[in-house]
Length: 484
Ligand code: B12
Ligand code: SF4
Image 1 (cartoon, helix red, strand yellow):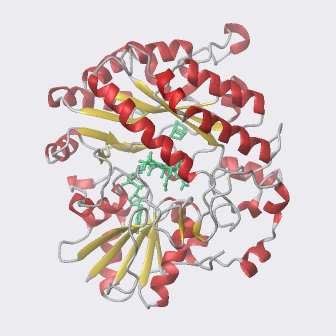
Image 2 (image 1 turned 60 degrees about the vertical axis):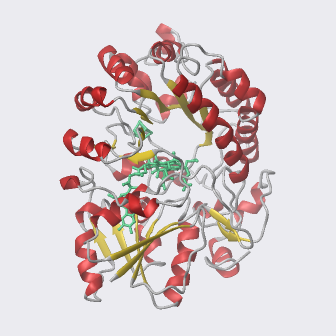
Image 3 (image 1 turned 90 degrees about the horizontal axis):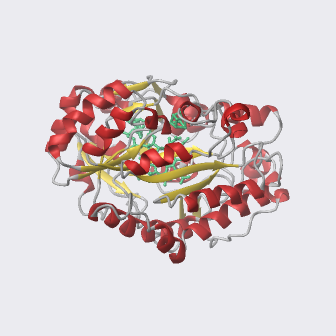
C-alpha cells in the first residue's frame, strides 16, 4: 500500500510555481507518517514548493487541512478523486468544520491522529474506509514514536527542527481555534521521549511548536531542567504570564531559550477583557486598570529583556474597541519595545470559535461567513464588520503596520538592544537571518487569493460590496476547484 501525504499551500498561481522561502518542515505529516505501519510506502508533496503529481499511482491521499488552506485542499482532493484515488483529510479544519470537509473528502479525521490512524489504515487496506474517524486530543506521539523526518530531506526547509513538547493550552481566548480543538486543556509529553527525539537530531536549533509551551509551569520546569545540559538553542510560543514566575524565567534562560512568540493581542485592557485573554491579565496591571493604571506590559517586557529573550509579538487587530488610531498606537508600542518580530494580524473569525458565533449572531460576518472558501477573499483582509471602523479601514491599517514594520529601516532601528538582539551571536544571527526573510514573505503573501488562481495579488482593500455575493452565487459562479 502507498500513501501520498500533502501539505497544501494557502494559494497558488496557475502558471508559476509559488515558492514559500520561509517554509518550515510540515511536522503534522511527519508525525502521521511516523504513525503509519512500516510496510506502507509513504511519499510527501509540499504544495508550497513543488508540483503535485496527480497521475502518479497511489492508494490513498492524506491532506492536512487548516482553515487558511481549506480551499486549496479541496481543489487538490478534487484532482485525486477525479482519478479514482481516495482522499482522507485531517487537522484543524476537519475538526472545526467537519460537515464542510465531508463534501470534499472520502473520509475525514477529527482530532489527534494518534487515536485513530491505525484503524483508518487497516480500513483503507480492506477498502472500507469510514466516512468519519473521531477522537479528541491527548498526549502527542504516544509511546515515543518519532516523526518521519527523512521525508523532509531535500525540500529546502529552514534549518530548524520542529518538535512538540506538548499540545493545547489551558486558557480560553474567544478567538482561538486551539482553545476549541483542545477544550482548554494542555497535554505534555514525557520528558524522556522528547530527550530521545532531540538526541536523534543533527541540528541543535529547535522550534517547539506548542500552542503554549508554558501552559503548565510545573511540567515546563521539569523539562527545562532536563534541557540545560544539552546546550541547545530553542524558540517556542508561550503566554506572557511566564513573567510572574522568576524561577521559570531563570530556567528558560539557562536552557537555551532565545525567545517566544507571545500573544500580546492588544494594548487596550478593555479589548483584552472582552476577548478573555486570561494570561495577559495575570502578570500586569490590566486586572484593574482604573485603580492601578495600565502600564502597557512595561513590567513584563522588562522581565523578558532581563532574561535576554527575544520577543515575537503577535497582535489581533479589529476588536470592538479598536480604531485605525489604536492600531497605529499598537505599531508604535511594538517599535518602542524593539521586538524581534511582530505579526499585525487581523482578528479572524475561525469556524466554531466563540468569536465566530458572536459575530454571526450579530450579523457581522462578511464573505457569507465562509471567508476561507470565498473566491474573492484575499489573505489578510477583514472578514467581519468591525465596530468602530469599516472593514476596508481595518485591512488598510493592518497592512500599513506590516509594511512599515518590514522595511530595512525598521529592521535596522530595532536591532539596537544590548539586552536582547545584541546580547549574543546566536540572537543576532536569528534577528538578522530571519527578519529579511519574513519581510519578503509578508509582502509576497499579502492579498494572495486562496486556492488556484490566475489573478495577481491586488493589495487594495476590497470594497465591502464585493464581499456580499450570496452563497448560491459563490456555488454557481465559483465552485471550488474552478479557476478564476
Ligand atoms: C507551528 C505552527 C505554525 C508555523 C508553521 C510551521 C510549518 N510547518 O509550516 C508558523 C509559525 C510558520 C505558522 C504559520 C501560520 N499559522 Co500556524 N500553527 C502552528 C502550530 C502552533 C503547530 C503546528 C504543528 O506542527 N503541530 C504539531 C502537529 C503534530 O499537530 P497538528 O498539526 O495539530 O496535527 C495533529 C492533528 O491535528 C491531526 N492531523 C493533522 N493533519 C492531519 C491530516 C490527516 C490526514 C490526519 C488523519 C490527521 C491530521 O493529527 C496530528 C497528530 O495528532 C498550530 C497549532 C496546532 N496545535 O497545531 C498553529 C495553527 C495551525 N496555525 C494557525 C494559523 C492561523 C497560522 C497562520 C495563518 C498565521 C498567520 N496569520 O499568518 C500562518 C500561515 C499558515 C500556512 N498554512 O501557511 C492556526 C490555524 C487555525 C485554523 N483554524 O486553521 C493554528 C491552529 C494556531 C491557532 N492558534 O489557531 N504556524
Ligand atoms: S493563550 Fe494563546 S493558545 Fe491559549 S487560548 Fe489564548 S490565544 Fe489560544
